[in-house]
Image (cartoon, rainbow over all chains, first blue to last red; front, side, top):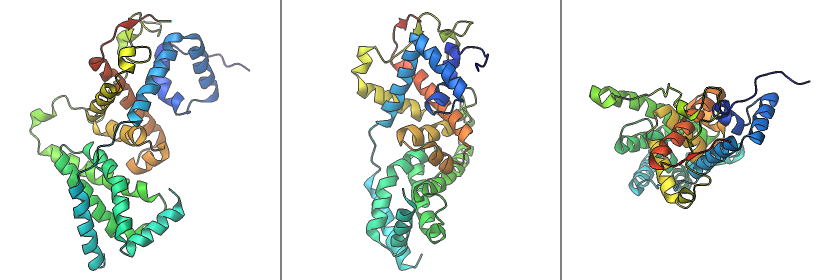
Amino acid sequence: MVEVQKPVSCRRVTELVTDYLERRLPFWERLRFQYHLFRCVACRRYIREVRQIVKTTGELPAEPPPPEIEKELLERFRNWKRTGG
Amino acid sequence: MGEGRDRALVEKLLAGDEGAFSSLVSSHNGALLRLARSFVPSQAVAEEVVQETWLEVLKGLSRFEGRSSLKTWIFKILANRARTRGVREKRSLPFSALAGDDPEGSDDGSFDPTEFISDGHWAPGHRYWTGENPEIALDQKRLAAAIRQAIDELPPNLRSVILLRDVEGWSSEEACEALELSEANQRVLLHRARARVRKSLWRLFPTKGAAHG
């Protein structure tokens, strides 16, 4: 059985991209989405672009917090221990 | 993190194991600070919120029931504190400092309508910035810096979601738990955050248009 619904437009791809990447699209919608990608080079490129942004975001170098915070916290922990919480 | 491991860790902490506390602090402090920073206006206030969070964690430790992971429990405490503190700090700001502020991230912020023509197809000459653009592909450092800046400029609710999901790599379940969001709402915020980050990159990487295909 084929559901008769409007095909996915390029604009719609940009609206659904997160649902698609999070695997939250219902089965038929996912299929229509993928069919659009199959046919549309611009949207394939767009998806690659979004994936690259997400990937680079996940690789941002961590900025270590100032070590004084940790030192002070340990001091507090010792106090907490001494006073029994 | 496994439930058993959390429980063992909690027991160590309650027994006053300094090494356990120290390693817990160092594994989460950076992320806690970044999350706090998304709600409060300065690094100094964020540091205060992180300190207070750890004290609250210690105080509440004996009541920790393991219904969520220790990690999400700690971050939930932080998010609540930082949110409250952010609201309070904002009230003390002069009105002009709030101009152009959009705490709800309410506009969808996603797309430039000029990217599309009326039938929903990409407009000829719409903008890409990555992928086949070798200049950017080679310049990962600049890209990373631009993304960081874009995230820092997001309103709190978008910034906190993208931080936990994309920067820290948390699952949506974990992020929902810590930020007390429904899954659907979390996904909407993540979508807006990513879209805004993408859009803001155009500013930093103006590129030539691409033909639509």
